[in-house]
Length: 136
Image (cartoon, rainbow, N blue to C red; front, side, top):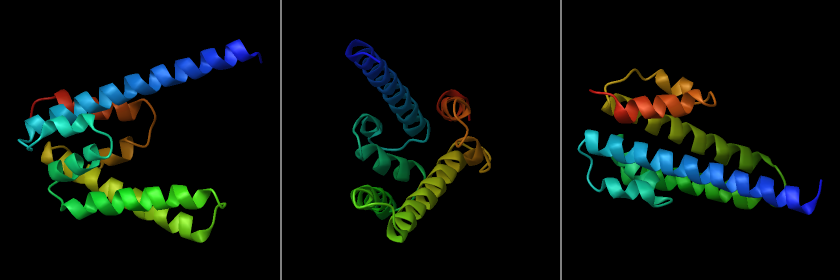
């Protein structure tokens, strides 16, 4: 594959990533507004949006901190190769993320099992959109 094609595919990936980030920020901000959560604009700030999610889910701020630390430390440890500590940290991050999304579903009066649908590509975007834009 030529350099031009590599640049093109990279640009497409960045564009799609940017669109997804904007979509998720809009959805998260809408969810925050519908749940009367303060500071919905935090949806646009990387990492701060995780703290907004914990506020929507009615969890303590340290939930966001633990989630972010687990993922960040796991990513740092990945440079040295996959090991059991990385697996444990990723598992902690995933569990906390699932519990936060369960809280968000409950805050929007939706079933907790919807969190399972967040693991299905494309369906997850629809579910987040329904949480954001549907009536209570």
